[in-house]
Image (cartoon, rainbow, N blue to C red; front, side):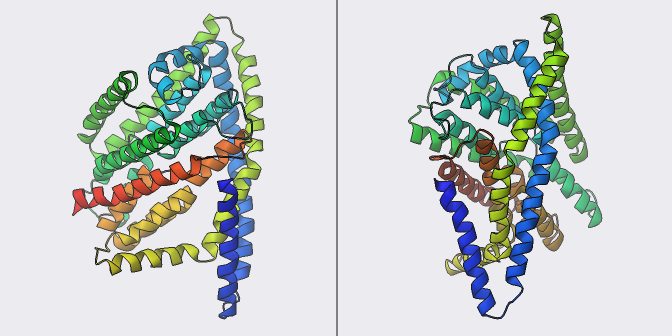
Length: 415
């Protein structure tokens, strides 16, 4: 129900702002909104169309893993941790394996793999949902962990910074200097999301069965991070790409070998899974177009600029430092649109310099936050969820905590 009000609010506020601007003499605002509206519809379809092949590919491999028994084995392996976070999921259920694989892909920064794996996890969780159009507790927890955007290395952000540094003539520039701050901020965002959802769902987090696996994961991530920080920026980015790609391809090979050993017809299994992937990708088009269209008219009406002006006024009124303000639109836009936020990040780096405080903060925000509205629209839309309950509120609270943490951490590291 809350998404209904949010979606309606985007359109109502955009129309009201456009009407006011028209009365003040700006007769281009309504045509601008119309252009943004139809461009968003086309973009939504193109995203879904591009996702169709990826979904078919990954759900095909997932079907092989399922018939080979590897998904069940993976679910049993992660059961000690996930059974506390997803108490509504039976021990060893394939949903646990699918959730763990999605979170692993996100951790390694493999967006192309994370999205189809996440959609597969939502479908598994939906099979346990007693109310088909209302989000279950397990689905909300899973979405909260996704929107927290935990990523070990922000590879794409580092690559963009390195490219811009070369254009700006910066010699010896360390594009990976935002790595540790980004990791800290994304961890804070994840802990906030986990804590908020657990509080709402009354899930006790202080259990050895949960804390020990999380601690082991933290130690492993810390060791890998320590090793990567000792490498040059370009070598660290290449190493992370190699580790991530190698991990995913190893899983694919494991599924194929296990299927062959268990006499599974892997080709037929892949085709069956790929057919399901096509249906899932087509099914999210209405949800994706609806959300992108609402966001587009909100931006085209100038309301994002108005919001930034209001924030700047409030910060100045309290006598606080304002050198972080140029990077704040990246955080606000990231909640709505990943591509839009990336464009704003590049604009901040070009305007203020890639090595400036604002440029570094923009990179930290981009690398440690997630596109909440996009994730909710796609993931819930893929299984026909209409009533999201407390999912959006919890995700936005985690986003706010992440943005605040990014500002504080950036000041601690770079000021």
